[in-house]
Length: 93
Image (cartoon, rainbow, N blue to C red; front, side, top):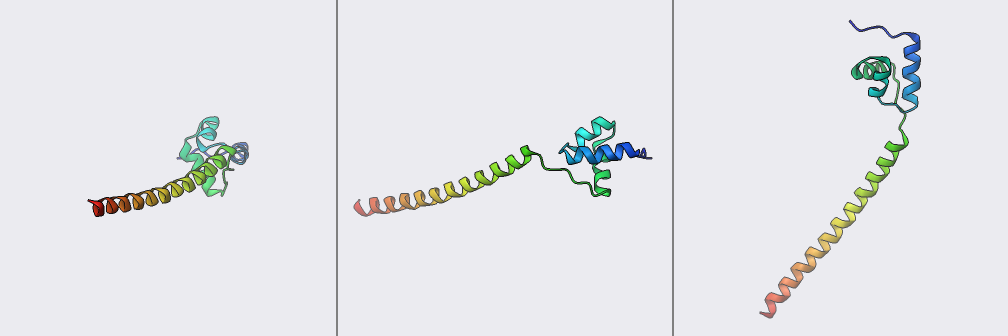
């Protein structure tokens, strides 16, 4: 059976989650399993604050996605030019 959480542990879980600590980090501090902390947060609707690192990663992902789309469009344009040049070379031969 699971160990019960003391009021101090509950307060600490809330506080650490609000600071952006991971479930794993909280679990290590409280000598609990990561799943136990995750389940406690879920049952008590405690959300983990997004850290600056996560926000930066999201922004980077958005930029990379946009760059990938732009590169894909450039590649499509280059492939069309290649096909046009092949067609022009075949006509000259």
